[in-house]
Image (tube, rainbow, N blue to C red; front, side, top):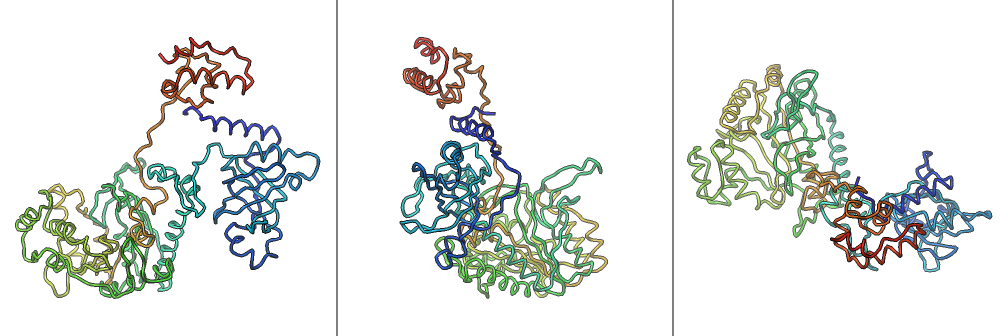
Amino acid sequence: MAALSEQEVLRRESLQQLRALGIDPYPAEAYPVNAWANDISENFNANPDKYKEVTIAGRIMTRRIMGSASFAELQDSTGRIQVYIKRDDICAGEDKTLYNTVFKKLLDIGDYIGVKGYVFLTQTGEISVHVQEMTVLAKSLKPLPVVKRDDEGNIYDGFTDPELRYRQRYVDLTVNPEYKQIFINRSKVISTMRNYFSEQGWMEVETPILQSIHGGAAARPFNTHHNTLDMPLYLRIANELYLKRLIVAGFDGVFEFGKMFRNEGMDRTHNPEYTAMEIYVAYKDYIWMMAMVEECLERVAVAVHGSPVVKVGEHEINFAGPYEKLSMYDSILKYTDIDVSQMDEAQLRQTCRDLAIEVDGTMGKGKLIDEIFSAKVEANLIQPTYITDYPIEMTPLAKKHRTKEGLVERFELFVLGKEIGNAYSELNDPLDQRERFEEQLLLAGRGDEEAMAMDEDFLRSLEYGMPPTSGLGIGVDRLVMLMTNQTTIQEVLFFPQMRPEKKAKVVTIDDFVNIGIPAEWVPVINKMGFNTVEDLKAANPNKVFNDLGGMRKKLKLDLPIPTKESVMAWFE
């Protein structure tokens, strides 16, 4: 454990003093909240009689102590509300400890309290809660970062370091509550999609996260091992093959919101753990699926913004259909003037070289086409656009195109240059599917770590018969990024993956004693803000010597003060 800062030491001392007064700083009993900050602020003026008896709880975020009466701001899950605390109201008898000692001296910014009272307007017209009872609910032992705002509410000194914000999201959302709206809207996105699917009569299901075969997508898996069964397992890269098994089992439509895991790179749009929605509907094809996606996403946009048009950066994205449609080959031709439709693998590889696209020997025809598309087409797809009719080599799980040789019935939905959805007319011919898997095994033999594995049980399920089916996967995190105008995936995840936190050096009393500081003076040195020997040596020796005398007097210590010569020696 790292050495405590002066504030942390003082807060622990306050904690002990609260307990000495018989106050439990972490009470177990429920606290009967019946009012919330935002509701009071928005509705008090219209209906003041409703707020004659309120019980509200939250963190103390600001305080203005003014003798026998004080103001404070409480922050609950909905916002902030001012509270007015008068000594003689919360201490009706002779004992004024709850106000004079507890509120004024032992409580800090960040502490949770509960208050009971009534709502009124101050002389300046501010809606406030006049407190008649106060209860300590949780003592905060670490000080919150101070976020400064001007009179218009603009932040000019905040908790803004992304590394700290993502790692300590509990602090981020406390001192930057405006970011909560991102996650409120994330919930709206998911619940709107879920409700839309359920209205159609499709069933939400759950499928395994630990899988014996990493199937359903081209991606590198996370590996693990099951000790009891003594077998390797993989965190799922997709749930597709299990959901299709349920279509074989006789369900007309199934969908799942779930975590997927891909042991790949991290950037502004990729996190190794992400949320996907996959849905499969029997007796449908990818043309039907396009219309369904347009209807669903328009409903999502309206639920979040009240309109199908969403402002994202400098663009206004219109999620109302119909969306533009371009085949994979036509999109490459449109943006490169190159027709790749008749090229073999060698020609595609040379085209990549000509376009300065980096490729390697493990890549087959499908991947080479995908690299050209990614490099030259994606960034141009701003408004919702379906890229359709992919080469068969790129899609081992999609049905062959009904009229175009060498292609499959697939589309991907692109918005603002990023893919957010992927759909097929699902391959339900078990013999064709086996051949496709065998082709994937050949790619794996060439070193392609993302090639699919053979799944004999899935093939067996297809042999029992799967009706014509259309399937769709949507990257929920990317969709939320669009709906909340965010440019990085980390902003829409409560807890994104991070590198291990660099541990602060564990400091002991001996570290200070070894440079000549008497052991009894080490706690005083820590209270002065020097938590490591390095911190101390960076300070001014004369100031440290003078401050020691001040601390001795302030803390009423019965200790001989170190001589100036000995203090100077600490800095050698």
